[in-house]
Length: 237
Image 1 (cartoon, rainbow, N blue to C red):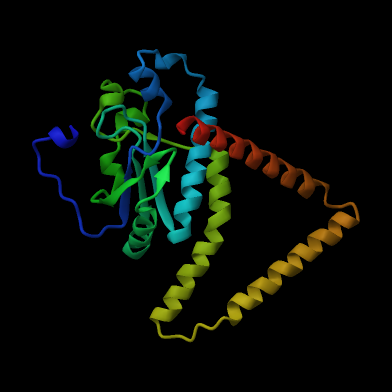
Image 2 (image 1 turned 180 degrees about the horizontal axis):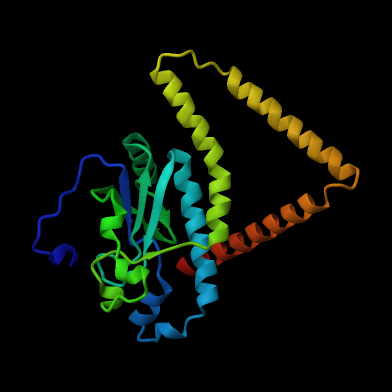
C-alpha cells in the first residue's frame, strides 16, 4: 500500500540488501497507464529489453562487491512498480553501492536508494506468480520477480564468479592474519597474458575460428544493447 499503509515498516540503518525504487520502467505499466492493453506487447522484445536493463544494472553494481541476488519487480502497484533489489555478500559492499548511486540519474530520473530489510527473498516473493497461478495480477503485494534469460545468467556468472572467489579468498587470508602480497595478482596477470598469447598463436595458425565467431557474436550483442540503451536515454530527454 506504499505510503498509505497503516503498518509500521522498519527501515534498517544497515543491511546486505538495498532497494532502488521504481528504476525499471515496466512496459506493461507504461501501456496500462496510457489506457492501452499490455497483452499486445511482444514478449520477445520485452525480454530482450529487460535483459539489456538487467545486465546494465548488474555490471554497475558489481563494481562495489559480490552480488548474491539481483531481483527486479514486475508488479504494477504504485509502491512496488519497477523496484530493484540487490543483495550483496556483506553490508560494506551494500553501503559502498548506496553511496555511489546517491545523487545519480537513470533514464532522466533521479535514483532513490535505501537499505532494505528484505534479506530472504523466498519469503518475499509470490510463489503463485512463480507457478503462473497468481489471481491478484500485477497488484499483488508479494514480489513478482522477473528473471533474465538463461544465457544472460550464465554469461554474468562466468564474468564475475572467478573474480569474486579470489576476492573472498584474499579477504579470508587477511582475516587469518596471513601475508597477502601483490605477487599472487602478478602471477595471475602473467597467466592471463600467456593464455591470450596462446590464443593469438592458435588463431594465426587457423585454429581459432570458433573463438573468433564467439567474440564476433559477443561484440554484435554488445552493440545491439548499446543501441537499445541509447534509444532509452534519448526518449527520456
